[in-house]
Length: 228
View 1 (cartoon, rainbow, N blue to C red):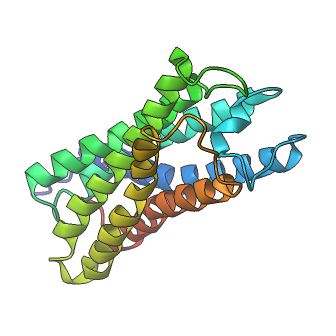
View 2 (view 1 turned 135 degrees about the vertical axis):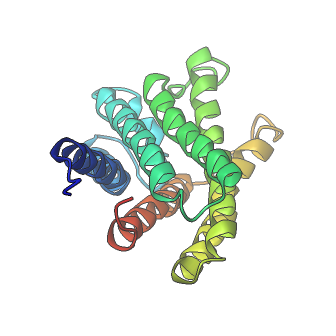
View 3 (view 1 turned 180 degrees about the vertical axis):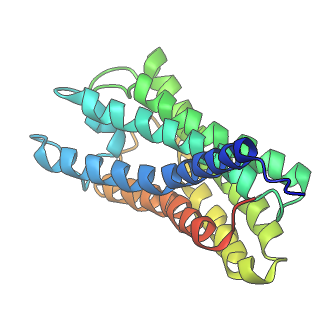
């Protein structure tokens, strides 16, 4: 007797396609984000990529470009978090998987938040509501992602084919937390403390390093883990 069900097979294919698209969102999103802020920074008059962080692209003329860039990245990373949860279900225990997925969702929401609430403009108080919310989003990103990477890495290092990626995730988590610690400790600094002239470069290095994790892990999931 033939138990083949065309409807069930079609549904399975659709779910598999949706899952792969979610994973692809985590690969394409960071690459698109870096491309847009790099081009935007190059074309924006009086903007210095060396001394000014990425968020300052939201201030002034055409600030909407970077705001939209943050929001699009946030939405794509949310899709990735959902796809990650499904793809890694066979490899990560339930509680660590739930915790890491929740943290990855927070990262996506925080990026979108930083597109809605822009940083303080030059001369504007850092205590303005939108500036505080923007900084809060930054801190959520660089605390949530490292913790998620550490949880994921600790679990994946136990699986032979994911062992190297587990250690990569752990190292990424340890490095990525540095910007959040810097912001946290700088909040206790003297009001007259000057921002380093290479602050923009440092900002970019850590953002690219953090987002590279999504690209590396996404490609690995697409090439190694078969459809569920």
